Length: 362
Ligand SMILES: [Ca+2]
Ligand SMILES: [Ca+2]
Ligand SMILES: [Ca+2]
Image (cartoon, rainbow, N blue to C red):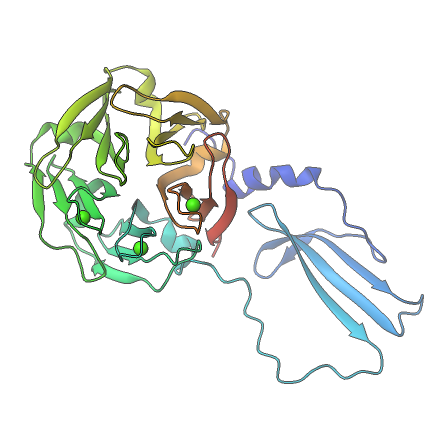
C-alpha cells in the first residue's frame, strides 16, 4: 500500500478543526475510553460553586464518522437514582462480526434476494464462506443467512455482481472464477444458490475481466445490464444479458492505460437519471461518477472526491437500494481495517449520509 499512515490517523485528521466544547468546569483532557475510543474532551458543570443541588458531567468522544457523541450523567441532589435500569449496551453495529472479521470480506454484491424490492448484501469471505445479509430497507440488516460454509471452491471467486438477468423478481448472482469460468446463480435467496448456469467455460477470455458490475444502462427498469472492466483498461457494456448469454456487446472504451488505474467500479443510480451511473475509485483515491452511462458511451465524468489517501483504503465497494428513498444510490464501502460504511442516498457529486455498519477496532 502506497500510504503507510494508519487509517484511524487519516480519518481523525479533520477532527482538529472542530471547535472546542464549552466546558462549564474542568478543562478538556484527551485520552481513550471504552476500549480505545478517542476521548477528545470532558466537562463538568453545577448550579453552585460547591457542586450542590444539581451537577452534570460528560465525555466527548470522536467517532470514525467524525461525529461527536456526548455521554452525560446528571445528578440531582436529594433524589435517589431510578432502579432496574438495563445494563448499558453500547453502540450496536448494524452488521455483526466486528472489524477483524470484516477485513476478510473479499467480495460484496447487492441485489434483492428476498423479494421486498430493497437490496440485500451477499458477502464472499476469504475462506470461501458466502453469507446473505437481508436489508431491512432502512439502512440496516436482518439476521444473516449462510449460503455456503467455508470451502475451497468459493475462494476462487474473483469478482461478483448482483442483477436480475433472468427476468424474475429476484436478483441473480454472477461470479467470475479464477480460471475464467463465469457462472450465474438465478434467483439467489436465503434458501441457497442453485440452478447454476454456465455463462463462460473455464479457460475463457473472462479470466481478464477484472471486475463485473450489474446495472441499468439501456432504459430498462432493473439491473439487467453488465459492465465489465478488463485488465487492459477496456470497458464493455453487455445489454440483453440472460441465462447462458451475455447478449449484445457494446465497447465503451478501447484498451487504454488510464482505466488500468480504475481500482474499483460499481454501478448505481446516483444522478436520478433513467440510465444509471458508473462509480469508480481510482488508484490515487480519486472518486468519480460517470453520469447516465449507456450503450452510446460512458457518461460525463463528475468528481466526487479529489485524489486523497483515505479512499485508497476503500478495498471493496457495492451500491444498492438499501434505504427508504427507493433509489439504488446507497454506497457500501469495506475499508482496509474492516470498518464498513454505508453512504445513504449518495448523489453523483457527493457522498450520502455516513452510516457505520461495522465499527473499526471491533
Ligand atoms: Ca431484499
Ligand atoms: Ca432473477
Ligand atoms: Ca437509497
